[in-house]
Image (cartoon, rainbow, N blue to C red; front, side):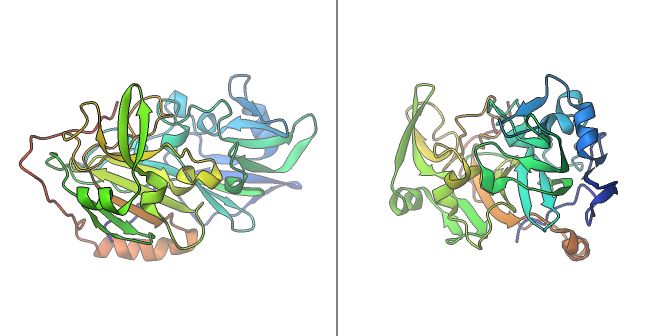
Length: 331
């Protein structure tokens, strides 16, 4: 397995009693780390970051993290690709009953995928009613991703990959919790999938819906992440759930291998595109690696630590053509 998830926060958290109320514990590289009861959240919410879906009211997840005010601290080891490092980070939300739900920072960051009219939020009050006994994670339009009786929000990250030489990718390696792992060449993508064509900003893209390409397995969707990587080591972490059409995922999120514009062949065998994103930092060009993996659970911290110590280096596959170096968008 190429990636072992690096823990960026403290896990194994329990709900904190505040009278009869329960607090959610926020941990990770964030200046807003702490315990938040519904009363606390109501006290810090402002007119600009209060969200109301008609049933419950709360504070936007991005605001709670201090995303717009520099509250999130990202880090990248020397020699690794540090471009748009925030796109390697994600939140693991856990409820009192053990339910887990992943939200990637790229999907809630307004500069990238956080473009929905109703953003993801942490609810603290019934709309028009009293405070909730326990805060709740709410992902509008995707109730299957919600977490009631929220006890913890852990800010985590996938490890950065070493800077690569770039250049046009010649295959896409798919691995992890997927039905059909393997190396996908251009001919494989063309022959094994029914092609889909989408028009974005006047450019006609042809490819495979990203959700179809992944064909994820092993049950639960909400606790998994998708790591995409280009030939230059640029990485983007997605939540698997944000790609699932049954959970509100955009079916236009595509893995194209051709277009009528200038992306190909400069962008290698395939790339990713997310039409709803503001900037194109999550549009991974010269894609050569995709992994679907579980977010780490608190009980697995010890095993992860042992795995990190025994892992000497990332197992990398580099099969480049003789093309000139190509870089990811990373706007």
